[in-house]
Length: 164
Figure 1 (cartoon, rainbow, N blue to C red):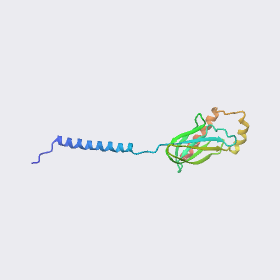
Figure 2 (figure 1 turned 90 degrees about the vertical axis):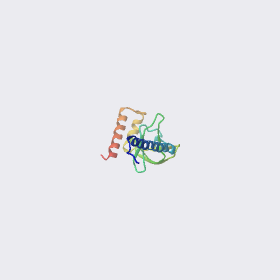
Figure 3 (figure 1 turned 90 degrees about the horizontal axis):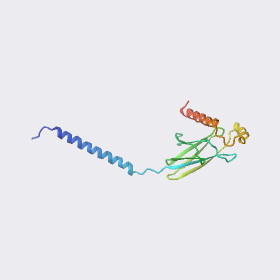
Figure 4 (figure 1 turned 180 degrees about the horizontal axis):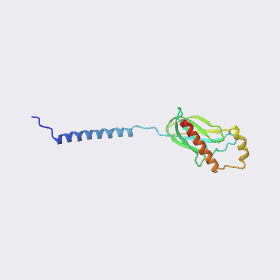
């Protein structure tokens, strides 16, 4: 004779199902650790003034996908280089600074390797003469006006990317 199912039988079935689901989830998670992910590479940008070969402080270096989607923005460190660890792949690097003509380069980053790119920025025609006159009086000034200029430039780029 078949008896009426009891509550303990139902509880046992639910516990067995929960245990199997838990084991399946653990195996799925473990597969993510076993699968190898490529080690990141590194982009190193060296930004210089084309006329003087001096480092251009405050340049904004944007790393974009080939479809022009922003991946990251880099700024220079104390050593004058902008560097960032990034997933292997092809990228477009855009360099901007007020008073200079923007520059763009295509770059390929490989796993576990540093890809160095040198960018020589040309002065914009309107600022070339003014820069030459003020260079001797303003040797490497990083005052509040320069910080404000960089902030305004970054804000304008952000708004233009958002379509405003």
